[in-house]
Image (cartoon, rainbow, N blue to C red; front, side):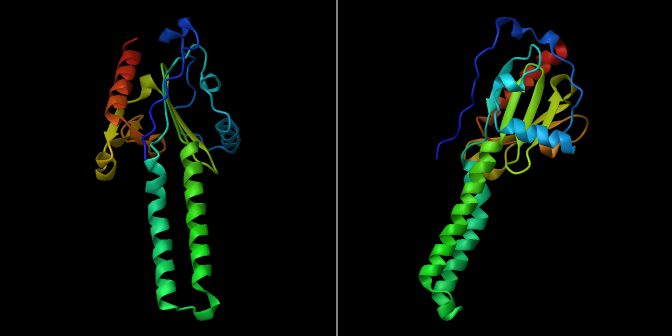
Length: 209
């Protein structure tokens, strides 16, 4: 399965490269208000660089998780369903109430539903680095958004769990203060080390401007 590469949107306007005119942020934490959730859910269906930018912001990176995210989030559930299906067929525990063919159909349907849901979750994840902000959008049923100004980020931490590292992937978490906010995580991203370096450079540039 191929890793999804970073999307580099086109520069919208040459003058947008000036980072000193970013519109001030009013929120540097995840939104949980009902009204905001409705706004985010509506926005999640039609995300484009233009719809997310404020003022003279310029998109540096727009990233989605690797397709391995679908496998990782579905593996446990699908494995359990398949194992239970095999045990049910071999033991005949339900007798004539659940024939082998019916067991296979039910197991396949459950696995298919879980994979489709994981695909929807993958599609809902969008990670955005602009000249002003870090933005993390995730959630298929109830989209949530984390955003923080680059000047307010105290740490961008590269996280490389064993499985992700084995696949050449990684995650990046952001802290506004002391602790990494779980809602900020860029999960299962390809080329995580290179992206982390780009984020660090953007933060340093913004704080130095």
